Amino acid sequence: MEASVDSFDFVIMVLVALQVGLQPVVTKACVKENVSGQSMVLAEMAVSVGLAIALVPREIMLNWSPMESIWLVGPPAAVYALRSWFKQAAYRLCDGVTFNVLNQTKVVFCAVAAWVLLGEGQTRQQCKALLCALVAGSMLVSQPKR
Picture (tube, helix red, strand yellow):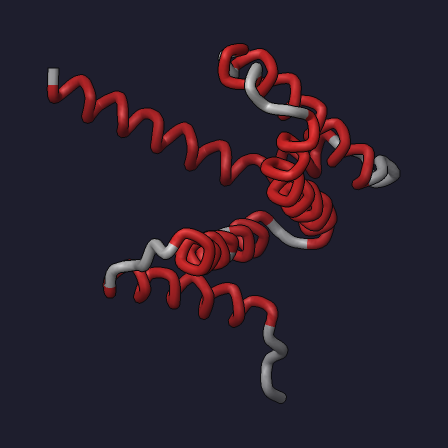
């Protein structure tokens, strides 16, 4: 049984890697330049909401009031929507490698948020990896010296 779990995990990692690598290429190929970034983000959010409604068990949402839902889910949803809007602009302006390296800097900000909001610190090895991601993203956006 253990070997099948490892094989399954490997297949999932390969599929995620393919999706991450191909997503900017597919977006550039399938989405015309004149399509509004805002409409793309709205469509993405609509699909996300639809999937959440379809996949989250109903009994979990029964105890939430509309105000409590907005209070708990609103700020992360707003940040996610803003990030998606920036991501749509980046698809159009960056090549796939640059986009994916810059996109990985979100891990740094998630780690900082987990530390500040939840008190979850990182190990020394994780901090080194986060620093590498931040440096790689910084190098891509910095101007070369002339």
